[in-house]
Length: 225
Image (cartoon, rainbow, N blue to C red; front, side):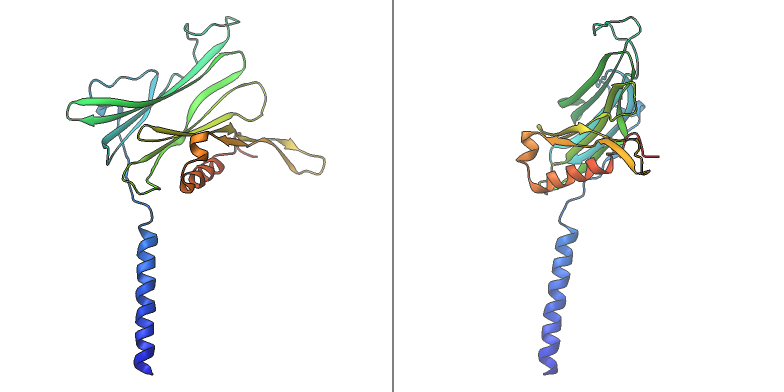
C-alpha cells in the first residue's frame, strides 16, 4: 500500500513540475535594450526631436525602433486658419539591421494640426513594449501614444499600434478623464472607450487580452485627483 501511495505521489509531483514548466514557458522572452541617440547607426534618419530608441533580436534579425516628436510648433506644411495656431507631430520607425545596411519595414506617423487650444502629440513614458505572445519568435511591438487639441479638461485621443513583422494591429479611442464630482461628491469621468481594428478583432485571443490590459493600464488622463 505504501509503495502504491509513493508511486501515485511521484506521478502527481511529476505532473505538477511539468505543468509548472509549461506555464513558465508559455511566452518566450524577447528583451529590448535602450539605444542612445549617439549610438543610432549611420544612414538612419528621423523627423522631429529624438525621444527614445530600442533594439532587440528575434527571428527577423536585429531590430531597431526610433521614436521622435516635434513638440508644439508651427509647421508650414499644414494650412493654418489663424497665425497663432500650432501643430505637433510624432514618428516611430522600425528597421531591420544587417551589417552596415538598414531596411525600414514600417513607420507610425500622427499629428495635431492647426490647433488654437492646448495641444500635444506625445508618446507615453513607457511607450514601447515587446512581447511574443504567440511564441513564434517574432516580436510583437506595442507603441502607445496620446494626442489632444482642446481647451477643457476632457479626454485625449489615445492609440495603441502593434506590429508583428509587417502586420499591423490597432486600438483607438479616448482616455478616461476626471471632469469633477457630482452633487454627492462622487467622481465623474468622461471617455475611456476604445475600438479594435479588424486585424485586432481577428487576432489571437492573447493579443486582444494584452491590448485591453495595456489600454486599461494607461486609461486615465488627466490623472484623477
